[in-house]
Image (cartoon, rainbow, N blue to C red; front, side, top):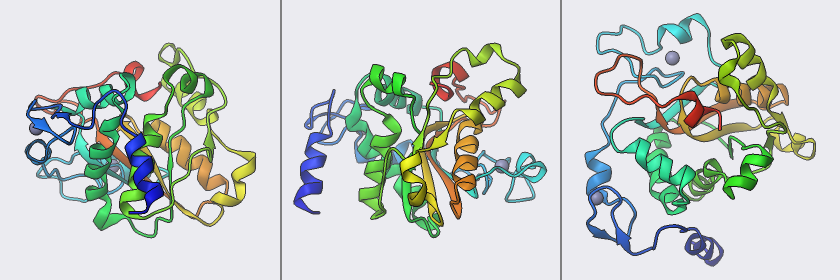
Length: 257
Ligand SMILES: [Zn+2]
Ligand SMILES: [Zn+2]
């Protein structure tokens, strides 16, 4: 690891000390999630190769019915874990409570999921926050994950390529169709970064995937700007509705903020 990268790493932790407790089992650790907890809470799940939704055991295909009916804009979604068990709590801490040190172990989980299916990816970028949201929060959790993934996988990472010029609010009061139109219109490729997109195989990184509408809108924006392909890399995906014992985040708390 270069000196520059390691000094950037030491700057990363905020809200958590470097030597503290595992955020899950509370044992004393140098890592915010200990190796035993990472192993214990990661269950291999059979997923749709396009959108990464969990597939029923008896599903005859590698792609879910929804993707058969209408393919997402991204080539493939890769997720590390279901949004259930301890993961919603950890992701909430990363996103809303300044626990930015969690980006490293969560990105590590995602990097492991990506390893075998990273394809030709030669650029990783985050799903952007609006400027207003970025000001309020002080950081974009998706960028923290992206930066870590770039280091861990040896792929260039860049912020600022996709922009979210307007702050979208109250989307829940809109019809599903109007909501999709709003989300689609929310993103643009920065006028200064058009050349960075053309011909690239891009992985879009986010913390949570619910309906996939945001990732889809981002992917379409990148493809329209000339990207060769877009994948979605996400730490956690909400399980298919009705799955036993699964937790469902609401649109308000996760997808649209
Ligand atoms: Zn632990
Ligand atoms: Zn699917």
